[in-house]
Image (cartoon, rainbow, N blue to C red; front, side):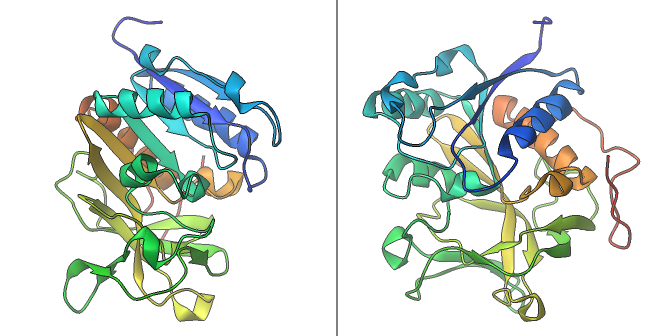
Length: 273
């Protein structure tokens, strides 16, 4: 490990999405290419396996990046994970990782909002940006948590431009074809919505401006939550790459030292690597 590098543990394994292991390898690559991070990947037992054997040493890392959506971990592992984040460890949640663990109270507090796996009004309010009010609102209307329309390109709108992750990014930028999660709900406590996207009715979305990038405190820890990154082609978007790199650094340190690259997408033109 190079002196000064931050250590990241990517957790993958069970997931309802295809090619997530390829996604883990890609995220390791794009994080390490900044030369700020050293990244390890750990894979959980397969579905139906002995989850008690999954017991990472979270304390050996600055950040845990979850690319996992599957069966519950052991109570021992849950407790160690909670202790890690509460004591100041960073956490990055990518796409379907916000589907995981619907009954784990602390995890849902960490991620702010999530979807599917039986989530409903008992999980907490919907969270979205109301364009007319110009603010994020919490909506306690009963209903399922988690849905999405057709995959498509969509414009991401910065809502908190002064946040370290977002500072210097365009107000609007075109994201590559992806699932646009909508109707997510959860505890929604202390969530800073960094960016949203309009889940249009025409694409069978909610018709709301939905959170796609979020920052959440948990104890002394920091959580960066991105709903982007459904497929490998989605993750190749420079917008996904740069916000993941910056979000991981912020989760580790509370600061972002990385400059915005010249190939970052504009509102009219998306870019990929």
